[in-house]
Image (cartoon, rainbow, N blue to C red; front, side):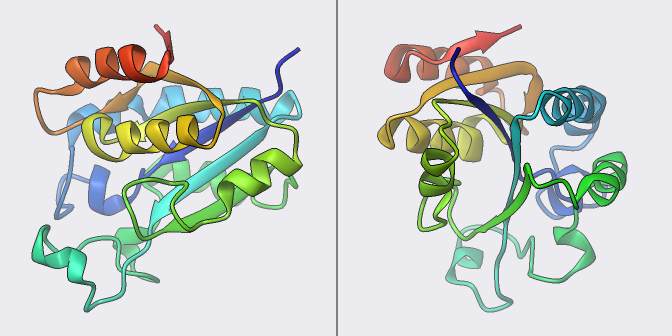
Length: 180
């Protein structure tokens, strides 16, 4: 049986809350129950769950492209709502990892690929925001590191009209499994 891990990407207040500077808003809020349920299933099955979170310093050059967001140790960088409650309730579980990132790709200079390889993970399931940016580039990163990939349609959202296009692109480029 293939050993699997769940990767929750950028479900922060700044990306999900109505007043977040880069919010996906209601579409992101709508996927929270699904992500919470899926993460619980993974942990209960003894599988790894990683919360991958944008982590920027106040003077990050990234803010030349985007409004300031996910500044380290701010309320905006915290997990959104019920996901934060879920994380707090489960944070002592050895299979739950918090992984800060400074790039769109959750594998870029984070050590995440090595963590997965050491745990025997072969397939990475991705949920979170945004489908066409961080999710897409994270799936690309997982593929480049040699992992099989899956994207959960009910667990991703974006603020553009490119969500479905990028899911199709993940299938074409990385042979990503689509979980309906």
